[in-house]
Image (cartoon, rainbow, N blue to C red; front, side, top):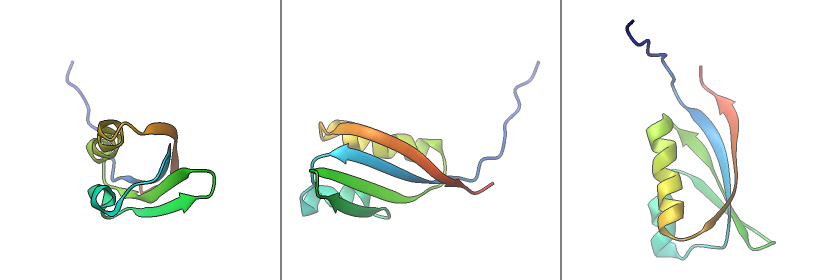
Length: 78
């Protein structure tokens, strides 16, 4: 049996983590809007074209030793 690929054109996500980023590290997330929440958390929002792009953002959060709180798909383009 052959594998079938489904066309997935990307999604808009909200990704929340504990802590704030300095300007240098904030540039790692260029293309996503960043909101500092009053409870010591940061909210990233934006469109990611595919799963590898999402994993890239999550890897950056991991590399910065930030505590991931929530990932939410807000809308799907497909």
